Every structure is written in structure tokens, then in C-alpha cells.
Length: 486
Image (cartoon, rainbow, N blue to C red; front, side, top):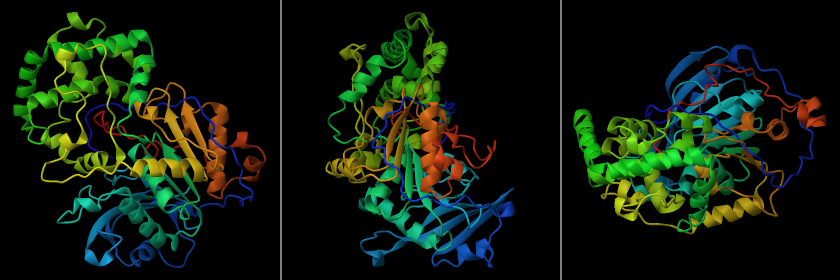
């Protein structure tokens, strides 16, 4: 999905908080059998139907047993408020099962993968999957790029147009889904176009309502895991700052050997500290409690190489180089204008060892790109979700820092849920929930998609994914992001 930094994504899931528990009133029809081998019940081949959509063009078709898989370009307005002011090509992929099946609209919030894969809701409903590349992630970037047109409403409008175009091909129920920034994206889509989707499954979606108030993160790091594990991590992080001089010499050699530069962030010193301060966050985002055994237990007596290797494995020293930041310029732009970004404190580290602290997103975006904060956007979305959510499921991981500020449900929410997977990290999913919540979540997803069998409608505890596990299609993305990106 995004640039790999050689880290292993550990899957995790956690304790559940039930939001407003409504039930659907209409009993959906029985799940119909999919057309064999990814076929089509219509008279026209599915590729021809897709390419008949105005603005749709084929990049390539890749074979996959039981499906048809297409990588496509779709012509989008740069500005949905003023469509006449130019267009750009936005990549999408279609994993086609059959036009008699429901469709899952998946967004990562970043680049789109062009390798066939299946999100968890797609497997649950045994459906089609449409995946969309987020605007301004290359190559889905207008030229020249007017960065003021990169906001959550414009991105939601991209999804709306794709949905409108493909609904004619896939007329059955649609669900939106995504993880992390993709879960945020699915939520924003629902907020601005609440009549498009029949349900939303948002995984580990941060919700930074007030950007200046981040104490929830500090409270999280005071109690997460065990004291022994926290002490190990804190010790390595502090020691990396104590040994800044020799380790920065090593960093300079590393950067020179790989052709890395530091123009955007301003200096190697700033980049070094940013990587080190991400260390503890990065561990809990991607690792499990059992992985504490891999962290040096006695940091003051560890070698420089041991400290370097631990920070490199968890944070990644390429993260804040120009080359590491370039792909993610659109994310940092959004974090600094609308989404917000976390700030945490480090009570285990003496103040004189920290020169910059958690740096703002502005430091990670080239100065040639103007940024204007819009602090009113996230509170408005949060209020809408609390009071108007319908058929929305949020899944978080107990040990994932990003879940410290999350979406919550209020008095107006209907048939919507917030669940937490015990012991899990940023890879939390429905399969990792406690059994009762896992069954309920699966049943609601099947029902929203219109494919819940009668047995499930009668007894939600009987809910299971309709499609068998596929080791290639259903493998979780093992590419790991630098810590301060959701």
C-alpha cells in the first residue's frame, strides 16, 4: 500500500465499547451464489462495461482465479466545485466477483496497491472491491498541483463520483471501508455523502478533534503494556539522545551511502531527533507486548550498534529524509491543514536532551507549498458522527496509540458501534475482537450488505465470512509506515 520500511506489521485487536445498538428493520434477501470464476450475469463482458463509463480507461488487467482484476484511470475534476477548471487522472482498481454481489469501496488514504487483495469486509460479504488512490498521491496528482484543492471534501467528492459511475455496473449494496487514514477517509465520505453507502467499516481511524489538546496520548503511554516493557523502550529512546553525537556520525554515513538529503526538515540533527522521538510510538503502533523481548533490556550498557539497530528497526532512519518524506507530502499537508497531528511529552527524558520535540507537519512539507490550518473541520465531522452515524462500525486496537483519540457515538447514532480489540495494535480488525463482538460485527456487515443468511438474521452468533480465506488475497499489508503517520 505504501512505501515499505522493512518492518513487520503485527496484527492486533481489542476490548469493545458498544456504541448505539440499533438493529436493521428490513430482512435482507438470502446471499446469492457468485458467478463462477469471476464471471458476469450480464450480456456484456465486465471489462467492456467498465470501459464504457465516460472518463474510464484501462491501465492493465491482471489474472486472478475466481475474479477479474483491473487497474484503471478515471478522469476527475481538480475542483469539484468548479469542474470546468481542469481534470486529472485518478487510479482505481476493481476486483470483480460478479454483478450479483455487493461491492466494498476500499480506501487506504494513500497510494492504491495494484496487486490483487481483499479487505476484511470484502471477504466477509464475498463481494467485489473497488479501491481508490487518494488525490495528490502520485500519479493521481494534478499538474500543476493546486494544493488548496487537497482537502477531505474534495477527496470525498472523488469517491462520490466513482460510486455514481460504478453503481450502474454494480447495482447491489455498497460498503465503505479503510484502515487508519483509510478509515478516516471512509468516515469523511459518509459524512459528506451519507446516502451513497449502505454501511461503513472504519479500522483504527484517528479523530483529532482539537489539535492543541493531546493529553490523551500522554495518558496512553503512561499505562500501555507493562512497566517492564515501557522501561525498556524509554531507556533505548533516552539513550539514543544521550549518544546523539556518535550516532549522528553514523547517521551521516548512512545518509551519504544512500544518497539521502535533509532539505525539507532542515537538518540531519532535526531528522535524527524526529526518528528517535517516534521510537516508542512506533513500537506500540506496529508491535505486540510479546515483542518487548526484542528491545535491549539494559540500554545504558548496550552498544551503539544495538541502540542504532533497535531505533532503525522500529522507527526507520530514512523516514525524515527528503526521499522518505516525498511520497507522503499529501498526508503531511492534510495533517497540517485539517486532520491534525499528535504531540506528546517525554517525562523520562531530561529537557536538555530534547532540542525540537514533536515537530509540526509544516516541517515535513516543502516550504514552496503554502499551508493554512482549518481547525474547524475535525470538530464538525466529529459532531456529525456522534449524532448522525448510521450503519457505521469503528474498530480500534487496545495498544495502538492512534486509538487514544478516536471516533465516539452519541445520542443520534443508529445501528453503529465502536469496538476495541484486546491487546491489539494498528492492525486491529473484526477477526481480533472478542467472540461476541466479532459475531455481532460480522452479522451487521452481512446485513448492511444485504447478504445475511437467514440463520444469521435469526442468530447473529452464527455469523461467519461468506468467502474462504485466501492466503494471497487476504494477507495483511506488511509494509510499515513511519510512526507519526496513521
